[in-house]
Amino acid sequence: WSTTNATATTTTTTPRSRDVMDKEEIFGIIRNIQDPEHPLTLEQLNVVNVKDIQVFDKESNVGVGQQHPCSFVDVCFTPTIPHCSMATLIGLCIRVKLFRCLPQRFKVKVRINPGTHASEHAINKQLADKERVNAALENKQLLSVVNKCILEGMAQEQHHL
Image 1: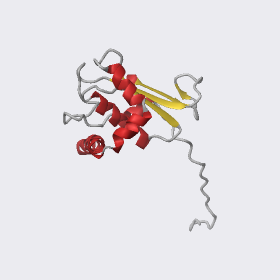
Image 2: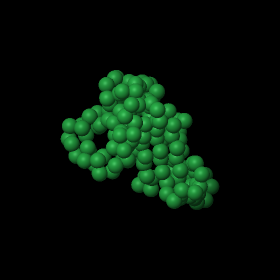
Image 3: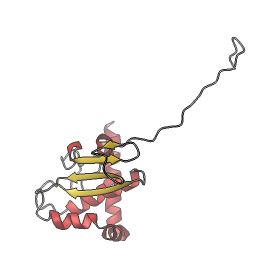
Image 4: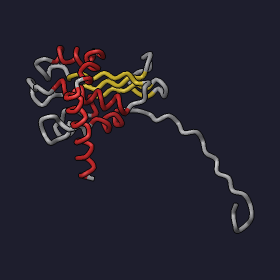
């Protein structure tokens, strides 16, 4: 009630629309993952960038083409060197963070940019195999490393704000 003129004031709210996911939103989720070997984020090392992300959100028809049967996120990353021993772990960190942050309607694909790693096909096969990814995450030590990369990257970003 308004105290000045005794008329009721009403506020109408519209239902919140679904969050639209685009390349920039996905990049914002993964950019601050910390590299397993360096005290720098994947963005700082140019391992991930916006141009290597594709998004299609079937619910809002946002993203590449509209012929896809489901919503998806496809992230390509570039290891720092062609023989990087941490490439699989980096890919796993990206997958885990996206699984934790994205709505369930999204299928997630994480892979190495073509021609940027000596074992790209083997690593891409591992990252695409849900059973292998789940088995890897059952390893408490490996899960601890993944969590550390995700959390320390977030803490580093908060420190710089």
